[in-house]
Image (cartoon, rainbow over all chains, first blue to last red; front, top):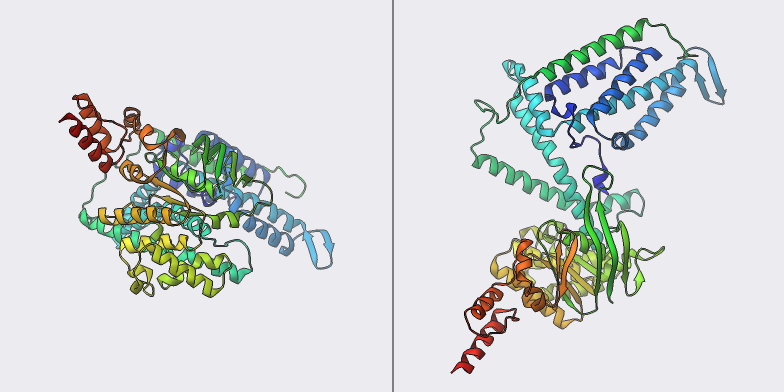
Length: 274
Length: 284
């Protein structure tokens, strides 16, 4: 039941994307997310779509798996679309009934927003699909390292992140186990109104909290037993180095951003209102 | 009250990179009142198998009959099945949550819709059955020691008065005394009530002592399903899959190889001692 959540989980496969330096993937994802907001035209979307499709192909993550990750945001997507559709008042009126009005601008914004949101989620989940949590925090630590100079505890933040990420699957599994154990004792988790449902979560939340604290305690002890004392002077088992493929990837992404910006702004292709 | 599994298959996360065929074509019958031991190394599918017995996991294919009724048929009362087939998970103390032991043990019966007095009666009976002293009843479950917590958790399932009790490694992480106590308590329960007991374990010794029948699991398949002595006769094959027969089996086989005509069928230390004595007597 709870295992089905795919958003943000590593998907093991052998691909160019999996082998890239995590810093490349982090920076590229950020650039890609920004690039989605650089244009409002069909040619721009075409370039972005082509780029995304190429990256999905290169990642060797099955498309079905990626789409499954979109499920949790459907609600958010619907709300965004509906609000944009009915509340934006811009241009000619396309449809009007009682208090509902759809304008050209509203329809345009709604469609653009929906596509952007989907691309945003797919883009960022591609990063987490192809990068293990450890690589990710390593990458973040190295990228933010200059902030150390202004006394930002970069290593500590990265360590907290990797611990938090590491614990997600463990706690999910634990939740699954506790849920099953309580169901086996006749707990009813599905029926009833909101309050009854909230109450029926107590037999799951209490043991879950107890176990989370127990694990945190054990982990702290284990880290201290191995003389962990923060990031100063600490070396890495697998230090990050840029390779040729990483440099090529940077170039590809920068070319894409420039292309999407130029094409999105200056190629005058319009279909109907878009 | 028998349980019958027919061509049971279970696949974890089908269609993804994590796909795993956890159970392969399992066919089993567990008659009422039997003490069955399930053994296999980590990842052999034991825990997955027992979670099918009360419908917590739905098989990918195959059928399960409880009392000759198909549990996957439309309108089958799963909740009723779960109160008949009590499942004690690994480290059951991790599911304790109430403010005191008594209330926690009452959780199961309460979910069955019993009145407060009945719940309490059942809880008292269950707590007595697992041998937990009265002074602990009003304590917070988190104040108890490991072994006591485990007893309290097992009582929580027993209070539902299941017809079948399934225990997943009930002795994991306990000291030798705690382990023996719990196992003896379970054997005692099996004798006192006419409950079917299914015991999952790593330890051949433990299972050999109590089980009427042993099911050996390997890579999601049933490897052996027979009386203990017949299963242990295959000790060489058991070793190949990372398991071992009880130590007495090895001793008896060695003795026989060295010319002492002992019967190698014995499964417990006591039986072995008697057998060796018998042979030595005839020698004189």
